[in-house]
Image 1 (cartoon, rainbow, N blue to C red):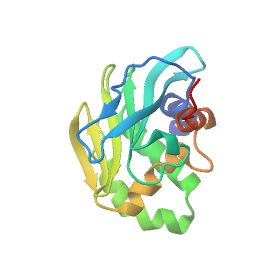
Image 2: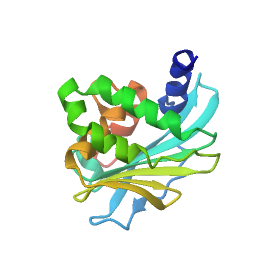
Image 3: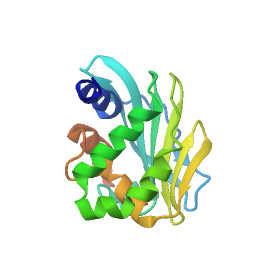
Image 4: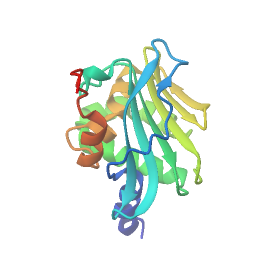
Length: 183
C-alpha cells in the first residue's frame, strides 16, 4: 500500500509551479551573514492542488545557481503532511542523488536529523538552514534539529538541487540566475 502512495507523497512534498506570492520575508537576519531571499515558488500537485510555497535564501543571490555554502530553504505548507512522509521522501531522494558510499557516510546523521521532523498542518513552516555550524531544521521558527556534519549539510540539499532532483522545475525556479543588469 505504501509503495502505491509513494509517488503521490513525493508529488505533494516536492512538485512545483512558478508563482510570485511574495509571502516570505526578504531576508533572514538571525544568521551571519544575513541571507537574502533569491526566489520563491508555489508547490502544487497536478497544477491545481496548492500544497506549499518554497523560497531559497543565500548571502548573495547574484551567485545563483551556485548554492555551496550558507543557505536556507523555506517551506510554508497549505496542507497537512505526516512527519513520516518527510523522512521517507528525504531518504529516497538522497539515495537517488548520492552514491551508495556517500549515502552510507551520512546515514547515521541523516536518521538523527530526520527524527526531529514533526507533522505539519496548514500554516506551518519548515526552514532548512545550512551555516558554517552545520544543518538546522526549524518548524515555525523553533529549532527542532541540528547536525554539525558539513557533509550532511551539503548532501541534504541534493533532495531539491541534485543531478536527479524530485522536481526539475522546482530546482530551476529556485536556482534561476539573478541578473545584476538594470532593466
